Amino acid sequence: MTAKRRMFGVSWGGLLRNGLAAAMLLMASGVAQAAGQVKVTVVASGLETPWSLAFLPDGRMLVTERPGRMRIVSQQGEVSAPIAGVPDVYARGQGGLLDVVLSPAYASDHTIFFSFAQPEQSGARTAVARAVLDSDGLSLSELKVIFAQNEAPSGGHHWGSRLVFGRDGNLFVTLGDRYSFRDRAQDLGSHMGKIVRIRPDGSVPPDNPFVGKAGALPEIWSYGHRNVQGAALHPVTGVLWAHEHGPQGGDEINEILPGRNYGWPVITYGREYVVGTRIGEGTERADVESPRHQWTPSIAPSGMSFYTGDVYPGWKGNLFVGALKFRLLARMSEKGGKVREVERLLTDFGRRIRDVRQGPDGKLWLLEETEGSVLRLDPAD
Image (cartoon, rainbow, N blue to C red; front, side):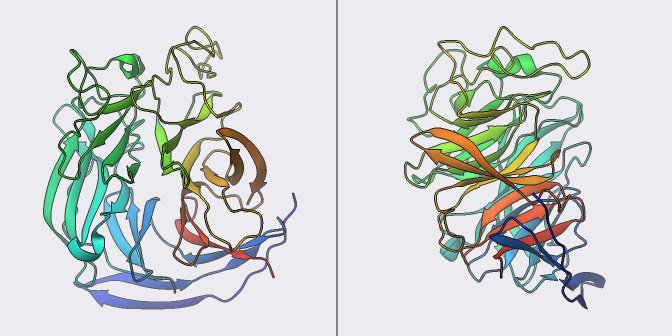
């Protein structure tokens, strides 16, 4: 795939809030991508390691920055000052302020949920908090941590942290294995390497698969995961789908079913980083769910969205996955649980794609870490 680059205008503006020159108007560049269907418009830049975005009802975006800031970005590229009231985060390695989603009842309760690396004396743990957002006053109130991993080891890798509300109003939380503790992904007494399902107040739904089972944490929904950094509900079935990082090979897309084992680190396509030897005992086992798709070599996937709009001809129903290592956006075809990679977009754009969301305008919006930008995919002229 080749690409032409076409630069549009650059306009700058700013405003002062709380004594900080923190808001920017960065109507930056557009880049025509020769995928035939889309071009990239850089809506805002200058963010520091943006990790997640969520659309407010008025079309503005709530964006997290991993060092511990949350901002509001308008669709015209105005970037607010940091929102007050965000708790301290463990901003080391891959840790920090991570995912953010709106309450399903946001229009009435103005509540948001976000995940972060919560610092402790021993190290840090993945935690989830809820708070009331004043989007005009740029502040959080009524902050409450509703979930935290039951272990807080040292180290800065594999936090997981994607948040997805199910259609029943319960919240899925993805939790990484923290890298050095991968064997605990198979331990139902540990939160490491799990996806959990909780109520918005942090309590456990009574229909979770391990409720009442000795030695198992009742909030666990699935286990045997490495580091899930992309998750979304299937638009037809409402079932959670997720992807996770493998090491050298074995990035996976999975349909997440209750109580199922997804194999890590026993059943995997991955290999050790240093010596390249196979991890575990093989790639298949009868009691382990096989991935719907796997990438070898690893693309380092992050962010994930099923596309349900009509802006891009032929893309409705496709699954879109960002890639950090390969710096691209993968378009995947899914039908009847079978997944294949159809196209690699933005390969010449050369930026690490962290998050992928469908906006209220029916377009795909991305966060990229290389330049710290909010991107919009527009139909090609």
